[in-house]
Image (cartoon, rainbow, N blue to C red):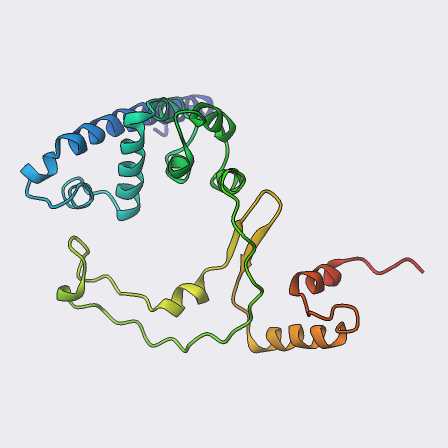
Length: 229
């Protein structure tokens, strides 16, 4: 590897990516057939998901994505070709599956070509617009120290060492910026008490102009440049 020139290294890397896409496409075809024949039952697994995680060693996310795409590809073979060609990545296809039909799938796959995960999210939002979410400020529960779950309480196939996060943990740790339609987005994050107090103060100060205390309008005003003197 170290003996390769930079140009050769880049060329070899691109070739490996090309081969990996072909292998991924073939894997989807094989998984589809294993699923169709229910061969996982012959291997003593209760589901295709359990077979993929425990027998094939996929992560839960990878198993879920591949099963969804493999099943959809039985009726829409163009999805496999989209993987083989690198047109759309596996994560993007998983996100698109609920919105693909025999009538629209080729057009949608073409629109998804080369898009990042965020780009596919925006395409999905256009295909299936979601209603606006209400503005919300609320106190999150205190988080207890993480605990290791006992083997008896875990789903089949999950390693005993996995800690089960509390519902509040996901809210604290993960910010959300997700499209609802082409032009509207859900924004969710966790701020401290001082940040909350500043928002409340801004609502009070602008109550004469924004009687409903709309948070979006307040934040838009906060970022707007001052009027020219």
